[in-house]
Length: 331
Image (cartoon, rainbow, N blue to C red; front, side):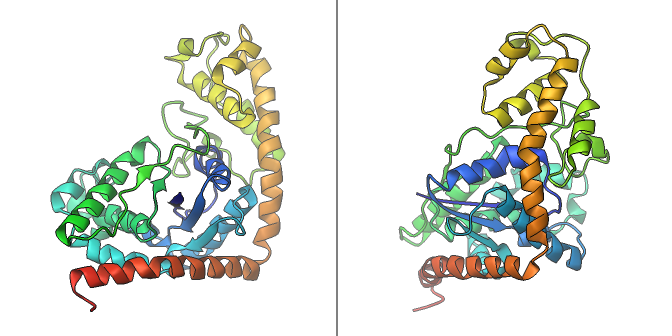
């Protein structure tokens, strides 16, 4: 089993990234061969300062390693350091169909009413995502609900290419369901919106770089409601902020929401929030300290990424060469 996944280098990671993806990646390392990349090519689909992009790649690499991604177990690298991704993307662009991409809901959401003014890269990035996976003959890709359509597109592209050129080159990837459950972490200010760096309110999220005092303060001020906690998770429907905080504690302690509620049934958030704050500090504190330590040695981070890119390029080369031969660009 080979698993491939990427994350855009957008600066500070927050608790939603950690519980929603990265800790799942950490667990995957013991279940499969894993490649994790910093998706700096995908980051070009929006405006970003070049110097900031480079700094963000290092920052994200440090955060992943601090969180438990082990370069001795997994291949960690920057997307742009392996040109095979972009080369295969062009070949797959000639296999993918406009109608397929026009149906991608994330394209519609991100472009909004400004489709004519959006970049070709924003429209086309699902094909690059497909290349990211297919270049390594990945069998599985960890995805959330909002990315399942992209896996289906990668499968369609793989099957069409194989059929068009009468070759069994690409493996149609499957969604990866290992690594435990990925938590869906919502804003601390609005339980109906995902925790996001783009939210203008700093109180909406917990950064991995936040101090213990700041974490406690953000949880203390997290939006709740006046009702006591029930003993049944189904009774949290219609209470998005309460459901979110219970889900966060469950994800951090490895409990189910049912178990958490059994501990706090009938109690208010005055009793619940200090426990949540302590659990968050216990999880984030050591990661933050390790991240600060890793940040200080940019040379070491660059060396880790360079070594990962070399390994990834070696894995990608045979597939790219075969794709070139299949379409007639090489003998």
